[in-house]
Amino acid sequence: MHRRFLSSCSSSSDHIDFTRKTGHHLFSVFTHSLIRSNTSNLGHLTLLYLSLLGSLPFFRRFSYEEIKRATGGFSRIIGNHIHGAVYKAQFQDGFVAIVKEMKDFHHVFYREVKLLADLHHRHLVALRGFSMGPERFLVFENSENGSLKDHLNDPLKTPLSWRTRMEIAIGVAAALEYLQFFCEPPMSHVSINSSNVLLDEKFVAKKHFAANNISSRKITAPSLSQISEVGLLCSTESHIASSLNSRARGNICTVLAVTRSCIDQEGKDVVFQLGVLILELITGQSEKEGTDLVLWVQGPDLAHSVSRMIDPDVENSYNSKELRRLLTVARLCTKSRGKQTCSFQQILRFLQGKLEPCLPQV
Image 1: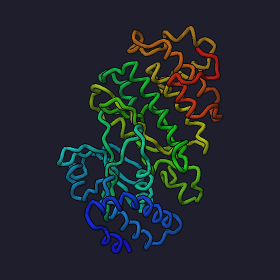
Image 2 (image 1 turned 135 degrees about the vertical axis):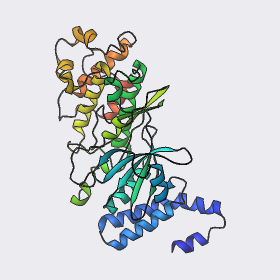
Image 3 (image 1 turned 120 degrees about the horizontal axis):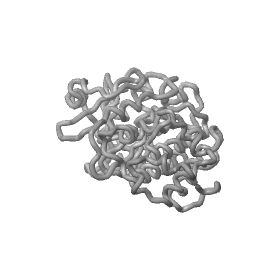
Image 4 (image 1 turned 90 degrees about the vertical axis):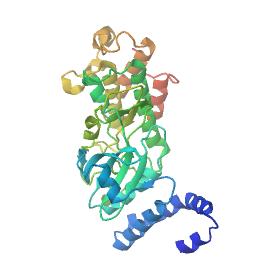
């Protein structure tokens, strides 16, 4: 059938136009069939479609040998996830990437490519390509400068400016708004912490998104709800962030690694986690350091203790109005864990100064 369609295209440009218009539709049909059946025939059908996908301009298809060379014979391991290892890779054309191995689970690989193909947002890190065959790999763009946690806690790292911290908070909120309100189905199972917020050299906020680390509210079948990490509740992929240790230069782009989380389907704890992340941006501290940031921001002495809690790296450069905004949003987000007091749309507008929070300001 597809051969007949393709032969009717009069030129290579017609073929590209055809695949652009029909590619995602065909993949949706194939993947929907795969979801409803675990037969090997459907698996081969989806595999055949992915071969067609390799001719599309959206993704680059890598050979196994290219992946092997780029990862130094699979020696540049920077982390692990439930389906295999995660590698740092440099290809012959100079392209530096993160390569994620996908062992054993064909349906996970198919679904991840499908979900990633449908995500288009300036605050989401892009899937750059894939490798398919007896061994399967996903290729993501690299994050040059490690994790937010590295830059807040490592004295050898370049300190983050106040402006960068504001951009990180706004960028993370924008990515979460997109996943929850503009994706179909909405995706609210994410985990946020300073270890899985990644930074690159451009300082444009992005979110590292791994589709097999999320689940959406409309997926109800047990085999699909487990696809995020096949029973693993809290992902280990934050190790990717801490392993990227180059120094920050110029603008930093925040990349939030979306992971499977221990939360309910409404994403209520994600709001709480975002509040904690904002507190870490303000103070440069973390909950693990022994300081209970949530008790502090919810406490009666907040206004009198801000000067001694703010990160010394920005104590002489922060914007007072923006600081009050961040503290107010952090109080709102952490006011009651497990009870969503506001949406990500509201949070984003609070952070941007376009909407005033309902709580009294700090």
